[in-house]
Image 1: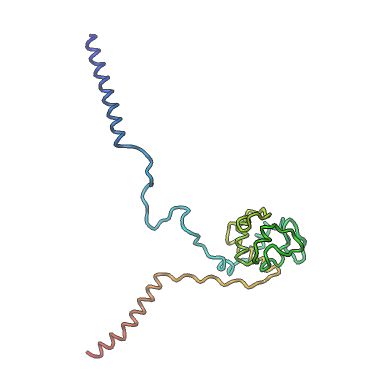
Image 2: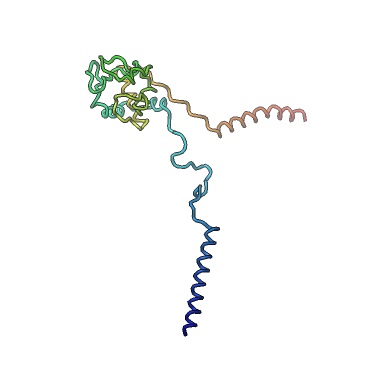
Length: 207
């Protein structure tokens, strides 16, 4: 009885050793590491976050700006700025007639930061757009604590409204829309057909 038990135990131990060895060997050939590139790429589809800004440019947004909406956006600025003619400076300068003015100058003796004083240039539509998007990126070291307006439509509406407050500079025309490739190809084809028509008519006349 004891010999039979020992024999069965030996076979069980041998089977366990074989199974363990097989697992080790198979792990050398098959592994579960994460692949460097997940899934399959689909042509014509960009990954999330890739690609540039496909929205309209500032000129186009200004050409169709909603001045009334811009006045509402200014409510976010009213805690620090006045905009009426001759208004007093607050935490920030009075903004009457700001569009087109030199950057960091004037405004009734307001103490502008050195970052703005040394910036140079004027408050053009483009500079205002960059400033309103991120004051700290436009003029690193500025005292302006406002984080910025991320929505380009809000910025354009606000700039258009500020322009009506003592500046009234002409707004730029909308950017020209790029011609569609299909339309260009069709026009090229039509031109080629028009060029071939006289030659074909001449050949028919000579027959």
